[in-house]
Amino acid sequence: MINQYFMLIGAWALFGLSHSFLAGDRLEPLFGRKSRIAYNIIAVVVTAVLFMVLASYPGIPLWQDPSWLGWARTAVCGGVILSFLHTLKFYSISGFLGLKAHVWPLTFSPWHCWVRHPWYFLMLIFVWVQPMTDTWLISAVCITAYLVLGSRKEESRILAVHPVSYAEYSIIVPGLIPWRGRALDKNTRMRLEAIALKE
Image 1 (tube, rainbow, N blue to C red):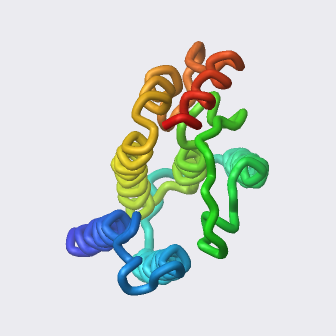
Image 2 (spheres, rainbow, N blue to C red; image 1 turned 45 degrees about the vertical axis):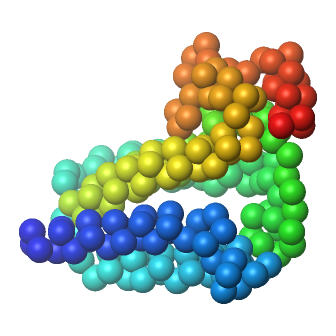
């Protein structure tokens, strides 16, 4: 059993390292303008293999859930999915998927006024409300660690382009979990977006 745990941790570590290493422009020498599409395809394949590894290890429930908790989980997961669909209004999906070249200016959507990484925030909720088994607990911890480290790496790339506007934004708005009293007001948002256009 312990060996399975280490194998699972190793699989998640390999996923995180490969995903982070290939991010950015590392695939451009091989795939050119199609590098973003290639990156997404590789990410899907690696994720599929990872979840095949996870499925091969039967999880042991850590506790017995009351019946009402299953309904609560379903409601929360449904809310997360609907929230994710709402966030898509504020992203260039074609650019994200690599279907077309698109320069997306630094702007702060209603979601980004409360948390710097809305998708990561929603993913954390989705991950931690699942029925908890020994293997899923390991996976949840690994996913959380990846999101924390990955968000920092992502922000370092943004700061390289927007050193002033994004640095101030990062001081005001929390990274992964919204916090009462820490949000971007309209005037500050407009001022930072104006600064970003000049950087």
